[in-house]
Length: 465
Image 1: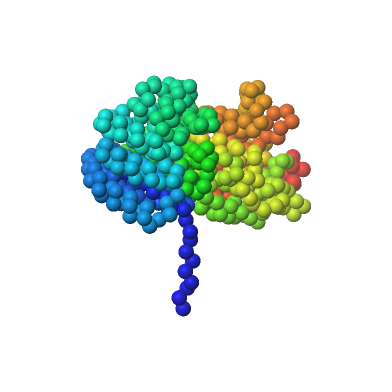
Image 2 (image 1 turned 120 degrees about the vertical axis):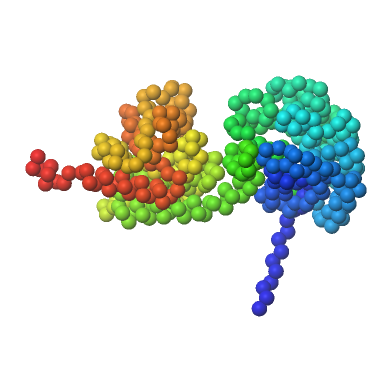
């Protein structure tokens, strides 16, 4: 018997850009990003490049009539909700695309691909001038620092100069401008959005990586996808810049060059939630069956698991209410849910800043017996001293765990298997075990328990002594 079809209605977006054979930028990046956002991506290719993670080896621009034919084929059939332009290659193509976009009553995001990351110009002066007409039909233009300087003549060094460049781009006809700050030196990346309603700055920590090829295409297509989904402009930009931060931090290690932006990172992260929660539940069940009472601290024990690309507490699964001792062993107070832990979760996230492969953690009681048992495990044990914690860190709620993790990793030669917090007056001493996977965390914890039990003298020996 045949099954009933169940078609899904998806918003459609169109990208008009060049093809990247390396898959990190251009049409390939745009379509991956749109799909990751739940948007059906269509395309019109303007040029074909031969490139990989090491660089561009050659490219060829398609005839204008072929670009127009692709646009017509898409726009005559699909209910396109938003359009994005990328590398348009030559002035005739820019002018043709401006004409195509002028008749559309949908959001248009223009990424003016003019200057490569190396600083090389990708368009001649005629092509740059042709963008003036396209800007008059743009909902948003997204130049990087070099492109904004070429377009406006303003040298970008800070938020004020970026805002001035944004205003100049609006005067050229664009409804809004997002001046990207990735090329401006500093510990943070500050993207400045200039609209008729004012200025918004989206700030993110700078990530020490060279795997940023295609980041401009990916950001613009993420904004386009969100606009196609119905977001307002500010919400779309905020969501897209957060998406980019994760996509760059967890870049795909492919090719012999720096690698590529991970376009599906958010999708993969969400897809891993169920498996992560189940892994935590499995570890908790093994602790109940083995009875880890001897390792449960007074404040209770918790097992925390982070999704592969976790950046926040609500992306970590833990026992709601912790694991506590009972008359017959240990028992979780309630079930496993995301965001259930704050203390151990923040510590795990801080540890991941030093080693992103770490995904699981458990807090255990700590005393001299546990310290001796830890010495039997294979791996380095680090610690931090709360007495050395700066006053400003103590005053900021939730910051102790981040400070402690950093100090512990600084004192270790590699990734420690456990980190000791000896506590302070009124604070219980704790040791946290870390692992890259749930099975490793379970083995490590149960090995610690076995070593602790083997070292504990029995009651007759104590009485005889």
